[in-house]
Length: 458
Image (cartoon, rainbow, N blue to C red; front, side, top):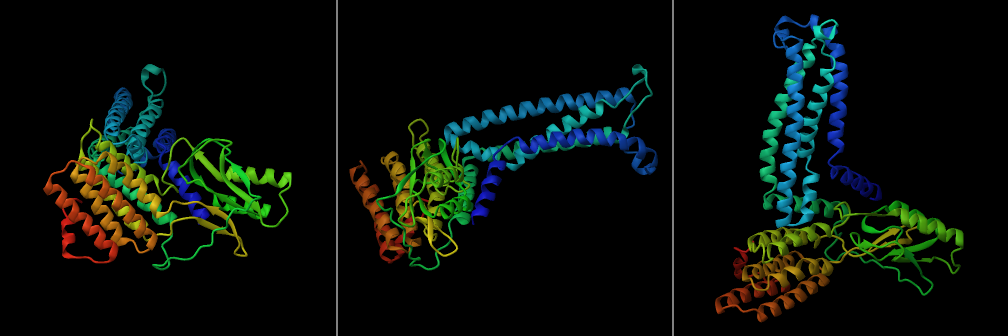
């Protein structure tokens, strides 16, 4: 599991960088521009007449003009296209959430399009240096195959530009952004959190920190983006201690502040050398970054969806329909989380002894995350409150553990208090009361035909 998590962290870090694939495209374009003209001289005379008829047939001056036009136009189109893209996405992020810009930086089609543009530019510029005219005082050289390939790459770039603009028009729609956040969060949940073995779950005895526990501090500042389980477990085994990290992934850490505790498995305290080695290994296992990522952080997707919902409910935006859509995706994720193992994660050594305790959010914390702010900022909108009630009903139908029912019931009570304090007319109150009854029935296992009233708020 630890190795898979580390691979996912590396893959996520690479995918969210905009430069690797375009940089590879430039390198490939330069390499092809160097190698192909050399091969051109050797193979052009041996090509079949049917194929040779499709090659570039102009002279050296025409070849230079064509390659110069390709290089100049491609770099201009690249700059203009991605300048407009960044401006468009900045406007979209200001309306929905700044954190949604991350969905663009990991967009594979954007990477491929930029790589194609820059590779064509680099290739045309490299081939241009091999063209010789009589004005150069040398033998005339016209790499026909190479110039033809430049022409083909240019046509491919034009097609790529059309496809990218169509793709961009779809990507900046809020429905597409929300779907990308949902699918990324669902992937994280499925890879990070195992399914429960049974409805009752499995009993876990979490070690309690004794009086002689020693505080562990953060080795760097930033958001906690990943943890190397293997390194952490090996450090605990080598030092013969139990390590308990009580901060959640995604938390903001400050260097030198506590992130957990550790204590020796026997009565003897750690010596100075072992303690120094342990703190170094723990600091190496805890990776921080300048932003949260979805690699291991199961809360991040819910945070993004909640941000979109409350942004849509702000007076400057006033778009409750977007908030309802975001809550629909949130509900789907919560229903998936209801069937997963939440709470502390225990890492054991070869003898089955618990060596590491990693804190993970429980269901009540996740429900609090997605309910508190939308309930507060949507308190005056009956449609938003109705969708929150529908969310609780859907969660109640999916939840199987008593603590999940208790958390849902607690949120229902708080939502009822919000409704009671709001200024709604009799018809709106009746509809909301009916939805609240549906939630209560779902919690008690009674699903009546009245639950059809949940429809229309999804």
